[in-house]
Image (cartoon, rainbow, N blue to C red):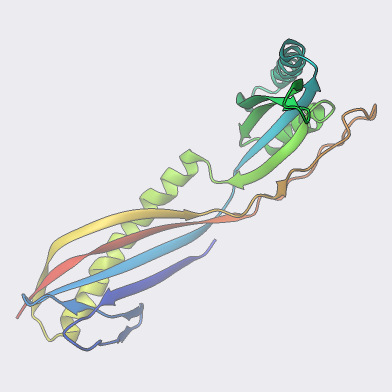
Length: 237
């Protein structure tokens, strides 16, 4: 993990002043009332601890009832298999059904698709469940991210870090403007996350294969969690 600190402030009295300090660089903008508005930001790279996946069944039939029976049976069986893995949260996803037409706009059949979604911090169990399900379902996508519990804990820490960085930058700007002290007019804390792209997309497996699909060793990668503190201080001359 690494933490980077970026400090930025806007300066508009007609010209821009770039201040360089040991903690980074900043520029600030005066408001006419000895006030400066600026921003500080802290970031931390976090190893992803949650995997999400979506699998689907797509089928065709001459009538909608037969199609619904095929889709529902497949999804119900998949949910039964998923119950063997209590550490994985499984839910039904998007479902769609639409008619197929001939050149005379007459309905000649139906096509439908049903999805199930997986979410877990247990990578081994999720990988094995996906392998079990791929005998009848097709992989739609697989992504990694930071769980809500871990994200909340990191954001709480970064809020403190961003607040301290804001105060330090306020002191730096106070000295730069030859002021005696400062007071905080307002400050806002904002969070942000940058997750990696999906590892897979539309990965298909042959459902008719009698051989079991091997499970996969996941490489989850990292995500970047950030918190910015932006606000205004008033200088005391």
